[in-house]
Image (tube, rainbow, N blue to C red; front, side):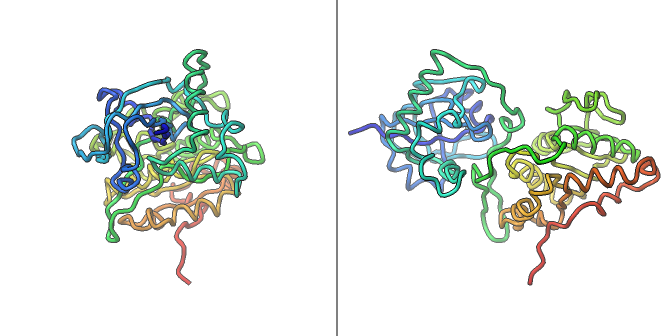
Length: 365
């Protein structure tokens, strides 16, 4: 019987956990059980890292499917499992970006929209066409012989597996990958660093302590290293459980008054909107009684997209619902308002930011 090729999705975290636990068991969500029954010993799983969109490994299937809920991954059980053996393995820096294979893979031909290929990567296992699977395996083998080191977005690499939430409507999940336009720099002079710097400076000028995402502390804008800006704090003074703390530490900007977080900002420049929304929803899910104003800050032309994503059932079914807590701030409106108020910002209350933000909650007709 011909070898079949199957998608095996990883985040940076689940990949590291896979290696730590011996690299001999791969697991999937229970919802994929029916499809998993088609996978047979001798088939290949092709490991794909969702956050950084790279192919990282080829695993040979060594067993039929079985169910096991022993704790191999921290955030989810992934109980639908297979024994596997690593055939080829790369590092995140040398892994093969999917964009480099566009001309070699049939999934990029005759697309309904430029990004409809992303739908294939919303769940695993999913079966590749044999020609695509073989082409990807060849690319991984070539990368082992002649590795090319490419930098990658550490925040996207470190993102947690997409969680399953319990709500009054039952379990709801977010797809592993979301169909998102290819990154294009917004029109104008804005950059992610500029907006992040602006929020940090604004918080400091309001007399607040400010926090920058732990993995962004060495970023620079306007000649200032973020970690050296006035009012930046080195450690969060609050005491949450470890999972909540890890989530909070990766939020782009936090404003604090004494020991209390009063506002959280996620700047979504060219990355998938989900990355910021998941951190916000994780925070609500883990700390439903927490009182923090949440803001998505993004290019003006992403307004409708942000509102649409915030109002997905996944986020509306949280308690309290994310759309009630989260507001949208367009880049130009933020910068324009900061320039307008100038030095008088020092006499204003932090709540003025709500006048700059748009509500995300959709009103019923």
